[in-house]
Image (cartoon, rainbow, N blue to C red; front, side, top):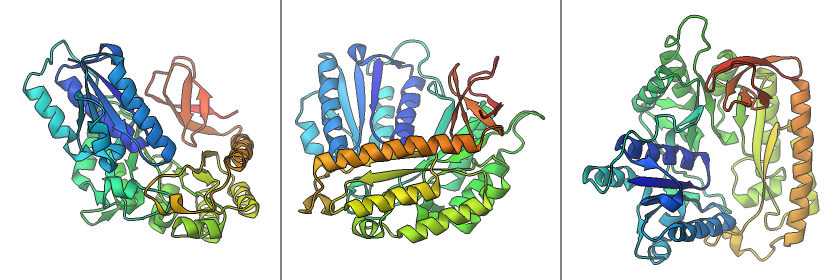
Length: 404
């Protein structure tokens, strides 16, 4: 069997898609282009109205790719509206995310055309490997429907997380990213996120030869209200094995807009957290998500966002023009920001992003960081800046580079 995977959306989706690929590869299925595939998996996203449109387009493209492939639709969009996807064609099979592993295992067990030699490798061609440690969300931001699609927050047992991380480190992986829909809510076996990180660092501390860089861990994304003093202390004391980089979603720098978004912090609380992080972990790099043009956002609200972004000095900002998602409170508001204003604000914020990223890199000029070699040309530093690869460095290795 030949298979193809179309992944949409967040890093959690990517980790899940990697798991599908690994399972099929172990059953001797072979990865291929959609045009030659017998099975096409579309791992969907529904976080915004635009994401929903892209998902529906991707499923239709999968059906057009060839005239025989079964198209497996899974993920958040299919959880919200399974009937829509099921009615796209008789080759479409909608499978809930929680049932995908069993579905693919059964597909492999019954033969179903699996043949060939080998298949997808353990690391799926990636140098940086993600581990999903948490799923679901108990928050209900007014622009978001993911908490409906994913359900209540759940955490993976710590023993399972540690076992997977140890296996990856033993196989040569040098950077592991912890991912989750609301990662900071991790709570399993009496451990919170900081406890889990401490356990992972300890269990992988003696797996490599003397003199070799140890496997390091990166926190994928964590909400500001979930950054504990314990986690900050661990970032400060781990010597870079827990990357001194946090993706800390802001969404808006206006306390009024944050309140209307249903975010459980205000602009001043975010500012205070960042100031404390910078004081305790001077090397830290901070990246974020910001939504522009949320319903009711005024010019003054947007200026507050720009001012807070400058104060924080983000190394990167993911800019999202607000996109109405049917079924959310924000989509029903009558004070939608006109598209032209959203576009203009997004352009301004992207320009500011470039300015701040250059400033963060310039502030690190002359310092040395370990960088993960991801391609023959690009290595990514602990602070998440891309650098040229030193001569002779192998893909997947950690090498010291001077930031210039």
